[in-house]
Image (cartoon, rainbow, N blue to C red):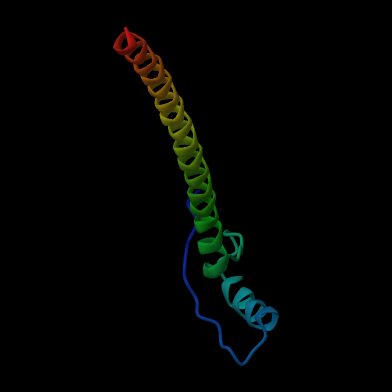
Length: 97
């Protein structure tokens, strides 16, 4: 059975417990539906908690990708410099002849 959803703004002068008790007594008229409370700020916090977690994971993997790519560039640069060292040595030997 589908439930009824409604948003209610509580009086800030009353405590939350007292205000919810008054709302529950009014809504007891519709006895077939259960009275369940959810606060908007808590629901938004739950939604954005997942977003924050996804943001942290994506930044971690982005940093990991940058580190791996910089290791690759360092390896390529050392390989090229080693090849150049051999090439310069061979040219010096041939130039001395």
